[in-house]
Every structure is written in structure tokens, then in C-alpha cells.
Image (cartoon, rainbow, N blue to C red):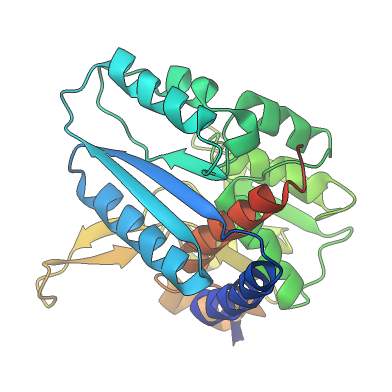
Length: 292
């Protein structure tokens, strides 16, 4: 069994990005600029945005954080999105989700200029991704592809089961794993209502678990020699920790890991790659790799 070290891989990629940025600056170009909008004080969102700011520093980017209270109106938030769309100094930006219930997340996502949508959530980027055109690919699926590539894990022709059908992970992951230039795999998508879920998993060469249920993937669902990518990050109570909780993945790591050829840990697997790929998308935005 080999552990897929997302933390170390992300550090390598950020160092590569920083070197490219310094070369850009030495050629008289400006540093890539990533902006983020944070609404309210959700604990998870606070942590994610803080880590994104730190990643910008590590990559040599300029970063801007716009904070607003959770009682702002949808109209006001859309105005702020409009300002970032029009700001020529901002290469890409994100609106941290979730948003307060009185604000339509979909309306906000669609208001973002797709050319600055480094989260890859805008319907234009999602559509281009689905048919294999150049675009910003959402960060978590892109990070998983990069881990598979850097660890030289075979995917072509392999049977890949994806657990979960979210717009952020499950659906784009399925699209990418079936495309020839990415996974070139035989893809099966399972979810909470799939009647043959365990049987499908037992035949899988690769399982990508993004179902949001701690310890959902058990040893009896995994065939020997499989590759397991665990996207789950759920806080579960743990009285032995100072924080009172620990992060748990969707995989019963202790019992599943001995069966695998490759497996990602939680934390330290997919998570660090997600923020790292946001940096990669921002660099692409600064270079106008996908859109003029």
C-alpha cells in the first residue's frame, strides 16, 4: 500500500507555480491577482479562505479578501461581483460557499464573469469541461486528476466508481474520468439510492468517494489492489482532541488501507490539492490560457 501524499504534492506544485510567477515578474508582467468574497462567519469557510490567502502568499500572488456580514442583500453582493468582473487588476475571483439562505447561490455563480471564474462553477465552464474544451476545471476534481497523474496510477480502461453526484465533485469527476484526455476510464456513478452500490464498488479498480458520510466505504466494498481517493471531510466528535473533533473521510481508512495499492489519507490527501488547483487556475487566468 502506498499513501498518496496530497500535502507534499501540493507543496511541490506551489513551488513550481511560484517559480513561474517570479519569471513572469522578471519579464515585467504583474503578479497574478486572486480575490475572494467571504459572507458571514461560517467556521469552515473562514478556514478555507484563510488557507487560500496563505496559498497566494506561497505562490507569489497578490490576494484581496472582501468580507461582508451575513445580513447583506443579494443585490449588494451581486454589485460586488460586478465590480470584480470589471476590475482589470483582478485575474480571477471566488465567492466562498455556502452563502446565507436568503441569497441565491446559483444567481451569484452565474453573475461571475466566466473568464474570471477560477472555481470553475459557472455554467459556461461546466459546459466546456463536459465536452472537453479548454476551461477552468473545478479545483477538487482537477486536484484528483493531478494526484493520479503524478503518482502514475493507470486509469485508461480501468473501472472507476464515483460515490456522489454533487455539482462540485461527483458530476465533474465522472465527466473527466470518462474523457480520453483525462481518465479514459469506464465510469460508474453511485449515490445514496443506488441499489447495487456495494457490488459496483467491489468490481472497481478506482473508487472516488465523495458521498459525505464518514467511514461509508468499508473493507468488504473494496477489491485487493484498488486505488481509493477519499474526498470526504466531515467533523466528527473526538474527546481526545483539544478542538473536540477530528476530520473523518468517507473511507474506513484503518480497515480499507491494507487492501489498496494506493489510498489518500484524511486530512492530507485531496484537501491540500483543492486549494493548490485554485492557484493553478489563477495562474492560467493571469496568462489568459483559456479565454482572451
